[in-house]
Image (cartoon, rainbow, N blue to C red):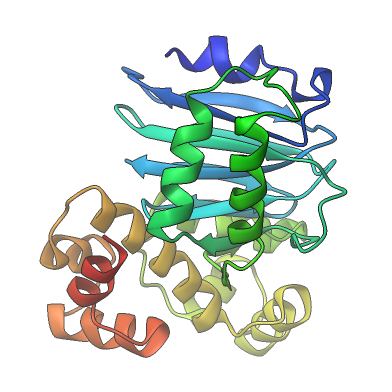
Length: 260
């Protein structure tokens, strides 16, 4: 299926069915759908590869075995990596139990297979038929999924916005808070206070959020732990593993194996 034919030209609001699914695969180069919004909420679930979503004031990098939830009427842009295989689920906003803000959802094997199965059906399926009954099971499973925060906040404050863009372009940049502050003609204390005020995180936690989402993206693409550690500027593989375990509770290989 081609990305543009199925996403950029697909209007979910034309269908009265409470849940719709599409599957996008075989993209030769990275494609991006521009900012848009719709009545139905959207779940973006990579089966292989990854998707990057810009939602509100944050960028979400979604590795395989996770999905990002975008609630109703929220402007968003979606970028899909080359050769990715991604399922898109569109869910009526009236379904009770879905999060009311963007978040990452863990996806069970059962839910993944239900979404894949629904993506094989016509969009205008009979609302009283077998597919509708499958959708009921899918929704019951979907609202039980635990949420996680695999996002990197992008502040609107001009100086922090510039820093966020530079970190996105080079996640391995290890400049200290003091060095960043000097570049933007302010004191280290002022920058630390500004980050805390705008993002409600310390500078280290903010940059750590980026390292986690980039690491998950790279690991899901098959890159080695050593390569990821080097790309993110860690002094050693063990230092990166310690950071990853402290943040997500398990070392990278174990975490990814359990996801699979």
